[in-house]
Length: 349
Ligand SMILES: [Zn+2]
Image (cartoon, protein in one colour):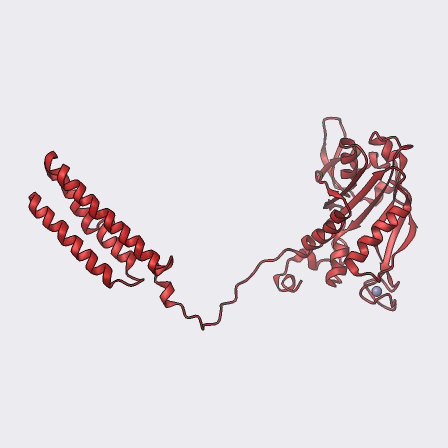
């Protein structure tokens, strides 16, 4: 092929392309692109032929070929714009807007996550911030600093998973049995006044049944400031429960014992399953009341462990099982529903 023939061929490709472009519709554009400037396109082949020409000829023919390539590229993108972004697959013209939509399975947050979020949100509004801590703890943070010394009988209540190794200070390592160690870790790091909650996973050697599991969630909270009293605790917990279950819910505080508070209280609310009607309700075991929180004013010894002057500062602490709240909020009677992850049930929650 000499340079005249090459130019004729170029001109032929130009006419051919623009004729096709005029007639094209949304489905043709990709094909058109491939046919002319694709890897094996007409123009691509012609441009490859340039290598057989002399340098002088290349200087003339090269720019001619490149100009056409630019024109074709411009035209293709103009057509793509005209027919919309879906033009290459031709979908836009093929849409039948009258067809009913195919159901699209949508994910959602697990009820436990939803419950943690709801509970956390209320405390954030009350000025609390959120802290987290490690799942693997040592005895000091899980027990000792919370006023539970080694020989203390309440350690038996925490059926603990111990690790077979110790930490660098020769303390037993374990899976935390409650989120209270976060309270100690936070107080060690920060100066009062403090308002903190710590939601998280905890572990106990419990068999799984309708109300127990070896891994479950707690939310622990505490407030340390000057002159904090049981009255502050009561107001805070009442506000929290009313936000969750409505204005009419009445709480009862009953004396209870937790080593890290003094005095301690168990907080109960009317059973949501039988509306406090008692009888044979399994939700409250026929008592009409459900214990939802453990709480109290922080034991002065715990404040001292964290380096706080217990004469100057006082505080309250509370803890709640997240699963209990999830069951009350979603009307679940068997906790195992929350762990089995049966999509047919989770979809309803
Ligand atoms: Zn009941």
